[in-house]
Image (cartoon, rainbow, N blue to C red; front, side, top):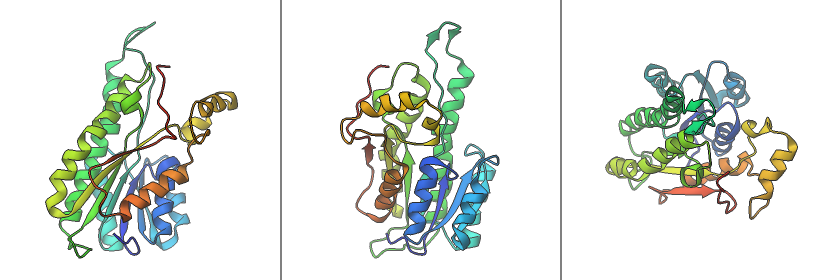
Length: 256
C-alpha cells in the first residue's frame, strides 16, 4: 500500500518506538493521528508534523477516547488506513517475592494496557477501515501493526505479567489476520529486543553497556528509527501478513 496521502493512528506516538513509527510513516507521506496520554508530549510531536499531524489524548483502554481518535482521523484526513500499537507499560515482580505473592492488580493492569488496549485500538481501527473503499487493485483497505516483545518468547525473572501480555499480542496476530482477510486488512506484529528508548534511558550507562554487550550482532541497542523503518515496510508490503517479526540483533534473553 502506498502511504502518500493515507492516514495512520499511532498509539504511544509521543515518544520512543511510537514516535519513531509516526515519523517514518509521515516521511512516506502519511497523515498521523498520535494517541497518547494527556500528560505526554503528544501535542508537541503532532505539531512537528505540521498539517499532517494531530493529537488525541487517550488511554488505549478507554473505548470512547480511542473511538474519538479514529473519528479524528476520518474527519480531519478523510479516512484511516494504518493502525500502529506502541503504547505499553512494564513492571518487574516475581511470582513470590520478599513481600509475598505477585500483586494481582498490577498483573491485571499490565494485561489491560498491553493486550486489551492493543485489541481495543485495532478493533475500532479495523471497523473504520472495513467501512472504506479498497485502496489497491487487489482489495486492500489497511493494515494493523502491533508491538509485542522478545519477552513473549524469552521472558526473564520478574517478567511474568509483561511476558504474558506480549505473548497474548503474539498469539492473536494470526487469528486476527485471518479474521480480517476477507475485508482486505492485514495484521502483523513486531517483537523488538533491547531498544534505545526513554524507558532504558533511566538506566546508568554501565547497565546500558552491559545490555548492549549481550546482543550478538550488531552489538548495540536497537534504535527507534530501525523500528520505525520496519513499521513503514510492513505498511507498504501488501504480501506481509499474519507474521511476528523479531527485531533484536539475534538476542535470546537469559533468565536474568
